[in-house]
Length: 353
Image 1: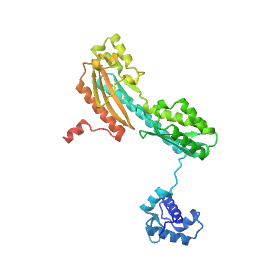
Image 2: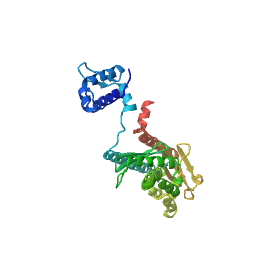
Image 3: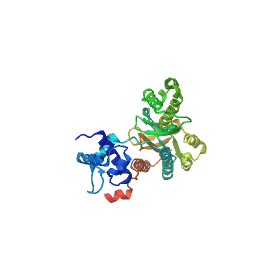
Image 4: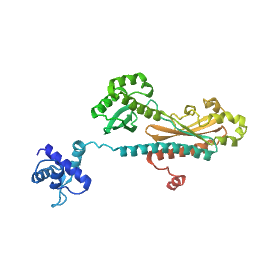
């Protein structure tokens, strides 16, 4: 028995009605909503065929039909339309993403403060960012004639989107032209490779829509900058003055300036292989750290990014205690960002032994 286009159309109406109402769908409902100029008797025959083919099921003898798993699979693969997000939905998603990024920043800052309180040493925390991120793909999705969504996916599978409102209407063919132009011109490029000259070439090719090229590419650049950006959070710098080695403010001044909030992230060591790194005295490259020890632990943030948390203090520090505390906190942060849960406590571990 052939699965004709009419049968597919009837199956689609059944599934969409059932999704909306959770009630079995009868021939009368289909006749009223399908737009097909056929009788209820013909619809009943087609539904019987669909049931025989395994696309529909009849839960009760007197009831209408409901979709089978096979019917849902055909619907997902062939019959359903792409859902177009409303402006309100895109705004809610974007607000959630912004809150997530703000929460990430807050957690990293709080982690540094906790380490400083536990160790009584200055602490720093940062996200290590990514190196050489590129755009894998652009998607421009029409929401309404004067609004569309930019979707950017990177080669590290990070996806970001932004709703754009326009002062005038934009046609679907114009949007598709922009989409093709962006994917052929700006994918596979690092931040440094997206040059003004390349922008000018793309804008010229875009014709009347040249202004939108700049708008979309500017958003892509923001995404790349965000993923490569590293921000330092420092805490407890005044703890230096509690240690004999730094009771002289004059001696401590250089190190305190080095650890200031405006410090360049590149100044701080990041473990390359091992999750924990200890740099003692002259092992530190920076001149300001030559008389200090730096203990650093890394943790997984997700989306290809790692975070770093560490302490700075005199070479006379309790390395065993510091590394144990940093290691546990780093493990906890990895669990928190990765699975939304905390690592087991020491008591939990002892109970299992």
